[in-house]
Image (cartoon, rainbow, N blue to C red; front, side):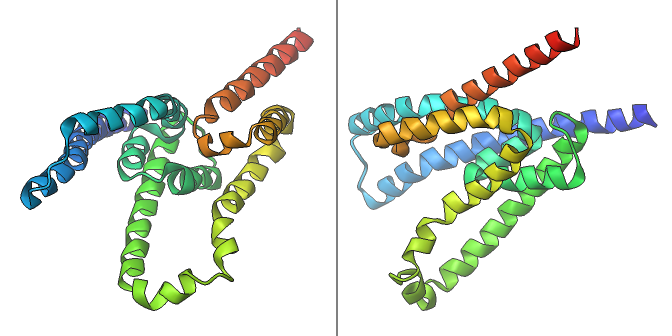
Length: 228
């Protein structure tokens, strides 16, 4: 039975990579081709030299963050979940919290077959729900516009993302406070001393993640030496 399950999972894994690569290439072609297709149809093609300069100036800034997100999130999500998440986007606000919550609910561990399946299903569900909510939002945009632009509710909308990540952070901090306290204190002090870094929070994942890994490694080494 175990061999049969292994064969099924290997077939699933190969099919996932095949479809994921094909759809990723198609998505990339559509994303890059749509502006040029629209520009050609309307007779308003942009200056390719200016486009290249703008792309490089932005691409260099986000290259490090993109590589860091790939290295951090792929082991958490598995192959299927990673393809879905990176193609549909909105990882930090939607896909990662959904996958982590689903993993905790079923008790799956990162790097296992169970986590691979759960991650893929949860991110697919999140993507479908997002599309449904966005479709309803577009359809109801005009009736809801007075509410969405209400000055009374604006502070609440500005606090949605911090509230989401604050709740998630507490859940993980509570279980690993001896590790979390170091990057938490370090990044809090750094942002207070250099407020301009708030605009580059994605880039700051790298040093904070590296610090957390270093602290976890040192604690592991200390615990191993104590046992010996």
